[in-house]
Length: 322
Ligand code: BTN
Image (cartoon, rainbow, N blue to C red; front, side, top):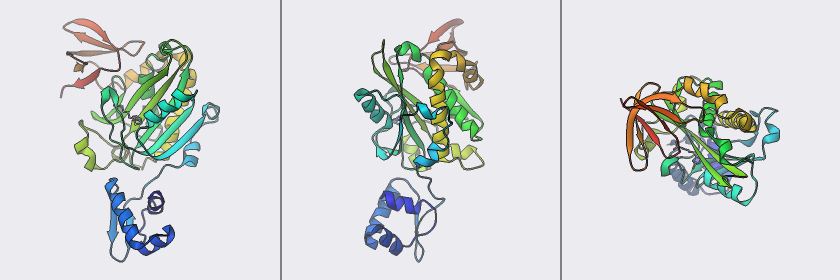
C-alpha cells in the first residue's frame, strides 16, 4: 500500500490499469488497496474513465527533504532520523531505543501511530499522512534536575518553528499545549528513561495537527485545529519536521546552560491564560484561581482566594472558562 500511496501522492488521476501494471497486481487488487487507503482517512476519489486520485495530493515524509532543513550547527548533534510508515507510538519506540542503549540525538517520525499517546494517560489521534508525529531522544548526565521546565521550553521552540513558516496567531496553554483560538493544534509528551539522579535520557514527543480530516473529531475529546487553517500557503510536513528537529537540537544542546529561564519570557509572551480565571484538574481534586504567570522553573503561579500558590508536575491539566 505504501507504493500505491506514493504514486497517488501527486494528486493526479491514475487509471486502475496503469496502477496495476506499476505495482504488478490485478485491477481488483488495486481496488482492494484503494478501499484500505480510504479506511486510513485519506480522501481517495475514484472516477469512471479517469481512475483514482487523492484530491489535493499528499506530502509523504521524505528523509532528504527533512535533512535539508537542518542547520550546519545541529548536524553533528543528530544520531539518526528514522522514518516509519506506521508505529504504535513514536514515543514508545524511542523509549525502547533509549532503554537498550545511549540514543542521544536519535529521532523517529511516523506517517501514522496506532496507539499515539498524550499526557495524563490520554490517547493522541494520529491518522496517516496528514500530521506530524515525532520523538527525539536526548541524554542529560546530571539527572532530572537538568530538565526542569524543559517541556515548556520545547513548546516555545515548536511555536518558533511554526512562526518561521509563517504560522502566526498561536498561543500556549500551561504547561505545553499549542493552541489556536483556544483549540489544540499541538501537544508535547516528555518521558524519562534511566537514572533520575544520574545519566538519564529524555524522550521528547511532539504532535502537530497539520491537515487532519474532520472525520476524526468524534474521537477527540476537545476542540482542535489544523495548521493548514491558519496559513495562507501550504505548510510542508517535511519542512515543518526539519525545522522542529533543528529547533529542538539547538535548544537541547544549550539547555544545561540556559535552563528554562532562557525561554520564560517567550513562553509568557504567548500565554493564552495570563490573568484569566482557570480550573486546574489534578489526580483526585481540582482548584480554581487566576493565572499570574510562571516561575523560573516553569511552575504555574495561581492566585487562589487572594493567596499565591505554585503548581508543578506533568499530571495537572488546565481548563479555561468561556
Ligand atoms: C498531549 O497530550 O498534549 C501530548 C501529545 C503528544 C503526542 C505526540 S505524537 C508523537 C509522540 N508519540 C506519542 O505517542 N505521543 C507523542
